[in-house]
Amino acid sequence: MSAVEPSAEHYDVIVIGAGAVGENVADYASRSGARAAIVEAELVGGECSYWACMPSKALLRSGHALRAARRVAGSREAASGQIDVDAVLARRTTFTSNWEDDGQVEWLASVGVDLIRGRARLTGRGEIEVDGRRYTARAVALATGSAPVLPDVPGLDGVGAWGTREATSADRIPPRLIVIGGGVAGTELAFAFAALGSQVTLVSRSGLLTSEEPFVGDLVAEALEELGGDVRIGASPARVDRDGDGIVTVELDDGTAIHAEELLVATGRRPHTDGLGLEELGLSANPEVDDTMLVRGTDWLYAVGDVNGRAPLTHQGKYQARAAGGAIAARLAGDPVDDAEWGRHVASADHAAVPHVVFTDPEVASVGLTEAAARDAGIDVDAVEHDLGAIAGAALHADGYSGRAKLVIDRARRIIIGATFVGQDTAELVHAATIAIVGEVTIERLRHAVPSYPTISEVWLRLLEAYN
Image (cartoon, rainbow, N blue to C red; front, side):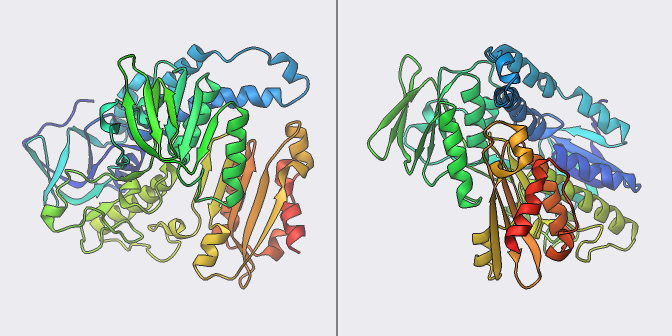
């Protein structure tokens, strides 16, 4: 499909940003008859497809599979070889389509969405400019994602540090890698590179995965150390340098220094609104939206996905996009908008039931509120935990299985409002908890949801028994 190149063109909706979120906004709006275009300055498919979700999980998966085989007698003896790094990198590259977006461009054409190549800027109500060309629309949706936040460390900007893009697209594995940041990206990539042969040192000022239940960071740090990683908690980089031989030195504020061939900085992200022209239109650079993703104070501008800061996860952004695309189409057609709580055109789950998985080993899968967050919100809660290793299905799944599960229960309403699972393959447990939270299923009714035996899901039975 060739890019659209008119001097001026009018659409029903223009979406700025052709990542997974923007694609879904345009698709769901066009399904209802809206004429849609999407603007992209880089690759159609966006961050998740080429530099985040897909390549990072591909880098992690081979190590996970090998360690899983080694945790079971019989397969352990067969899995005695070393990981094939070149094969892992090649498999990773297949998931990025070699950083080419032909397939995604073809998909846009197949659903009738026009592609405009270039960098967009808002110039007025329903008006954008892309590389000097003007386009107008009845509605505009921002789906520009997020950008990395770098710490203010002397010397950092001069050493050629990796961000997550450089790490997930790397064509070699450095002998030593320093990772700054104990969030999701930092911990996942620390596991990936440790499994692929790097001597990894992870530095985090406040701990690993600190937004999770307290036991999560401890279990993940212990596992990374078992994999050969060096976890430095409570330290911060004070200065960074790279010498003439290419070796990076990170001086920490505790007086120690670390040396490595590469440095990865993964210290968080922020909404990516630079250069969009929001301030010139009297709008905030951090747009606040209602549950249909309409920017407050406007009736034509939407902000969907990471750019609105509500729930910066790909699956949650796509959920928002489905709601927003439908709401845009309904408003353009003069049809009713189903914007009541849990309605078709709202993203109500952003407030109560955001599931996420950290693909470390053990995996961390959680949804809803932690116990601390619930108490901070003034909710009277009970909490119950259970050792996943004591579940028969887990013991069959892996010899010496180690993990933990926790439920947070609203005492007054008798419903689950938070759940956390840590252990091998616990990613597949979290959707049941998500359904229970969204459906507000009472504890009494959940007792009738009988888990199959012997599976790891039997932990639900044990948690409910412990609560009773």
